[in-house]
Length: 158
Image (cartoon, rainbow, N blue to C red; front, side, top):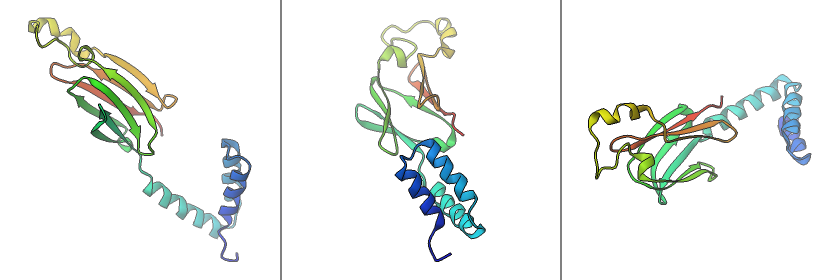
């Protein structure tokens, strides 16, 4: 090899052809057929890429960040204490969820008219809403509580 990284040429060709999933899969298959040194270089490159890739999201309410979520953790629970406009944004800047949450979605009871304890027993496991994001890769669900709602974020990819 003349000092060139042979796998780069395979990836460049895939991008010249539109970088579709099929083109990239073909490039990866072609890389597997390269000499062992080129395969090692590609594996080293991919290891660096994977280690440096941030897989996180930020949760904001009314444009104020309230939580940073590490999606490598697969599951996160965030307490939400105030009604407002919530936004979930990936570390790439892509907004994947926006929703206004009001008090009746966050809290089990209206704090001005508190019910007796027996009236809240069945409501403990009630989910205000559940939705999927990114073609089912992320599941978001909100469970109301007495003083805060709990937003659960589950990353299904893998």
